[in-house]
Amino acid sequence: MAEKINESIALQDYLKAIYKLAEKSDDAVSTSAIAERLQIAQASVTGMVKKLAEQGYIEHKPYKGVNLTTQGHQIAIQTIRRHRIIELFLVEQLEMSWDEVHDEAEVLEHSVSDKVVNRMWEVLGCPDEDPHGSPIPNLKGEFKPQRRFTLADAPVGQLLEIARIKDKSPEELRYLEGLGLVLNAHLTIEDRAPFQGPLLIKTPERMFALDNAFAQAIWVV
Amino acid sequence: MAEKINESIALQDYLKAIYKLAEKSDDAVSTSAIAERLQIAQASVTGMVKKLAEQGYIEHKPYKGVNLTTQGHQIAIQTIRRHRIIELFLVEQLEMSWDEVHDEAEVLEHSVSDKVVNRMWEVLGCPDEDPHGSPIPNLKGEFKPQRRFTLADAPVGQLLEIARIKDKSPEELRYLEGLGLVLNAHLTIEDRAPFQGPLLIKTPERMFALDNAFAQAIWVV
DNA sequence: GAATTAAATTAGGCAAACCTAATCTTTTTA
DNA sequence: TAAAAAGATTAGGTTTGCCTAATTTAATTC
Ligand SMILES: [Mn+2]
Ligand SMILES: [Mn+2]
Ligand SMILES: [Mn+2]
Ligand SMILES: [Mn+2]
Image (tube, rainbow over all chains, first blue to last red; front, side, top):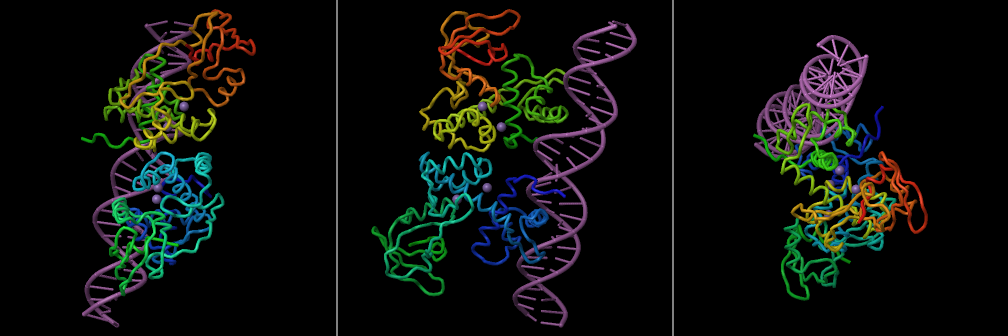
């Protein structure tokens, strides 16, 4: 009969991971994908998944994968909201750098109260985007709709502005920064090689090749 | 051979509790006092105390009590530092009220990194006092020396200024606030009853009796 | 100083989240 | 389509930090 125990750190991180994985695969999320993302043994994930399913946060078809329920989805979104507001707050108010705030937020997202996170949000001017350019859901968990492409899909020869850089490691972010690829930077795709090949990018400063894997992480308008 | 595992939440809260209890008793701290303060069963405290002693954070004389080691003292002080900086930050930067920040800080003190807490501290102007008027230790764990009395010891008939109100519950803080007893408020002790009795206090606004227990929690200059 | 009471410790358990090794299932490949 | 490989689950353990009940030690009181 147990229900609604407490929203533990593990619970929030699992639901968030499932949300993110589902976002890019559209399919049911495999336990191994969760294990890989959270750096936890597969067997441990299976065990946790069973509990989360029992408690109604996800649906689990053994050997098939998992999907968030409405309840699980809501918790994932709210955790992401806290994460992004914290990141933005650290950058804007405490003048920290983009490549260090993600790890901080990964911890703080679990301990900051609704009251505090909403005060942060207000102080920031109720923004709907975080410093990586990712959208911040509102209190009800709704995202402001946005129509954008990744660099991998964007038209060639057209002036583009970077609107979002999806979660990358600090090393990768520094690499991109070195190339001048930061939020709001302008660029043009000069050419795109076939077969998921690299792109030839021109910025006001220089021209260079960018691997397709990176192109998929960069959203533009 | 285990040593320096990780500074868990429980570890930090125990050491902080021991520090605070030692502060007002001067004596070795009893396990029951810790249990009472942390709202944990006595037997659990005995178990935890044994572990903390094994790992060198405290010294434990069975049936006698515990004392912090240098190592334990350091962790306690740093946890208190984080706690107070967070409280002050929430009050000053997020405009939250005094009576709600303590509970927030009790959680956040365990997850805010040194980097973040130091940025907060700098943004606040490197203060050496928190919103309750309690001192904030510096990075090395040193308190700025201060010579003050509690209301219970302060001289009668002399103009005093409130410099600190020691940890009280939100209800108690509101009661004191209702009386006009807040940080930096001025007052005079008109009379003090014997046998730890109540004090007769005069503020610019009014005159009233204050229980000795409260007087011991209010520090003045 | 013996009996009562209070404080502290020991014994035995539990839940949350992990782990490794062994055992299925499912998918691929020959 | 049978064998091999990959993916997922089960079985059995561990660590942390907590709990209740029973027992032991220390402090009071008669
Ligand atoms: Mn992030
Ligand atoms: Mn996290
Ligand atoms: Mn406090
Ligand atoms: Mn705490």
